[in-house]
Length: 535
Image (cartoon, rainbow, N blue to C red; front, side, top):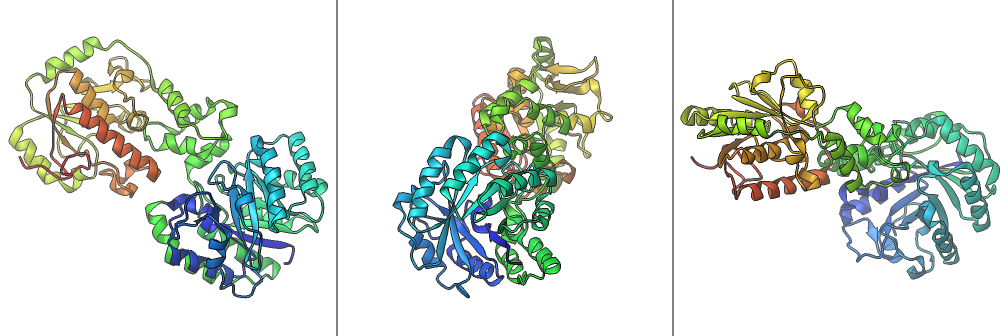
């Protein structure tokens, strides 16, 4: 099917998952296998002004790319790289002229505020002999008038291709085809139309099929990646789209080399840092905002889905397209904060805990793997047991601390209200609930602000507790199923967020340790030894 071409962006868009650390051999093998599959255009990675590291799919010059792909199977494959204005960019004036090497095209991405710069750079790229791909980030955010004016400028520039880029993954078929109609009726016929999708609504494959069936003589380029590897919800899967074209349009793509890439190189990455559709990315798309907003809220594990939706709706329209961590945290804390006077409650807690040995049990997986040790500690020390956001099945806690709305929903029918303390961010509590002020317990650190385990320790400090034993304070690992004693408590994690959260919680505990002596009954990444202490 000559008018449809596939562009594989595994090494570039997929690199958001693993910081582009594929390794030199993997990069070469991936390029070789994609070419072997008969993919027409292969994107090798970013062109950047950063120092070159051969283990990364980020390059400082075209020569570095040419050295990697000099084994092109049939000289029919076009190799391209991306320059992203505002991200890992390199001024194209520093690139050498296009040569007889395999790198024949440059993809240029730009935001609405960068249009003038993009067209200046586009002229430079063309003057150096490269095929120019113009790719406006967040095409769906342009008004029709803005979009048509952009097409007028594109016609004057005459690039090789112009793209519809669904950055936020919000397009259904009718949305895509409406833009395709605008392009097809207003773009010079010699300029190719490209489509880059994100799979927030699981529409990438359906949209690609609809675009394939669109009646036009214009050449169309569809972006995809092996196994859909890409930031957040990921992209259109190369293997799915190839199989569709083979079965319905008589194309001759070889899917097996793509599957080899997935098995040998991408599957291990997926285990550590998964990508693909989930409810967080759906919420982002439904609210037309950057996917990092909802994933940020999801990784907190403190909010119900309706609450996340409510918070996303509070993001100002002009802030939705680009992730602003400070903004979403401020909205989150405002939503959570429901200030109360808890002086009497803290005073009563101080009297209840005075002179007692205290054991705090958090829901880390170690309370299952180290249950025997915890029971031995309880039998030997007879502590006052406080559990955090859950009720252990091997000991009845003397007090339950609930600082998480989602956990309250799970526990509401099992609670002993008289022996439970809630934070004031939790809504719809019974009239006789014991409540402490949430805003006094949260951390100044964005990444640890909502940790119930830290909030309880701060409450104990306010209650004049000077020593506490901790169980189940494991810390967060890459595998979400290893973070809690029950898989029912597991949820969506962003690996970078987890690293930051671990570091922030460790810092909070170190600061608290000057006021409260902490003894770890079970292994914890927050302890000095990272393992159980001897008692």
